[in-house]
Length: 122
Image (cartoon, rainbow, N blue to C red; front, top):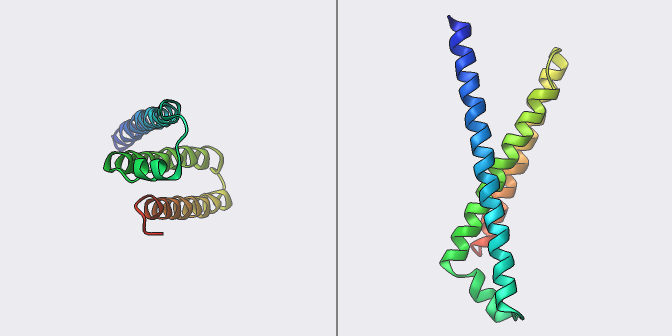
């Protein structure tokens, strides 16, 4: 019974991760298309136009959402790599814990630094 519940929870987690990774990929694609259109339609953007566009509330929110999606997308991908390849012996399990801690640290630093940069605190 416990095994069945555990398998169902793992399957649900896998489905959620799968859907979340696809959704974050869609958001990233939309952001790339959006930036491409902004640059294509505005022609020569000088510094003033560039700054006014990226300081607008719409642009700040879209960039922030994109950064959060990059972090989520990265975490799911790196977690999958760690759980797929670092299994088995106790040494590999310990390496997986260290690996995941490093990934969490890097992604958290990326998130904080990017948000500070986007919102003008750096």
